[in-house]
Length: 180
Image (cartoon, rainbow, N blue to C red; front, side, top):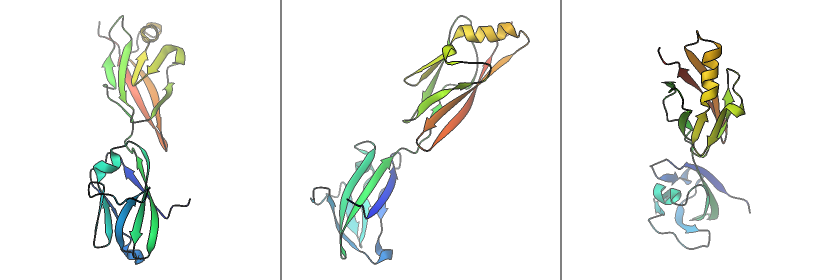
């Protein structure tokens, strides 16, 4: 079934969503859920022909589409509100640190529904790191091996890529050699 009006609403948005069709000469009289039942003011309200949807009600059920019917002075119109997460994944742990001898480097990310795509730089391969949940673990043997093969090296720079719907985030990790 075609949708007459579509809006995208950010899950982290704190302000209510306003649906104003008055510029099209349409005044909203009431709002119904997908079963044709009028919604309460805890979900949406209508004032001067403009519908307002309560932010906390839209985000209460997570992500995805929420369908309504707008009852107007020009007939009924279907409304779909897509609840999305616009926040970008990022590295929570410090991106620059001195490695601790004998231990793997473990870094934490906030993924916000994104995915870890991989690492690059300094000949790192998937055998040298793992990613599980929201944690990246870089193998100690790889780190010490890079500092051993180039004793004059003071830092190891690695890139990482995080993907999310509509794009990617690229960042760098700077692993410093401990001072002797």
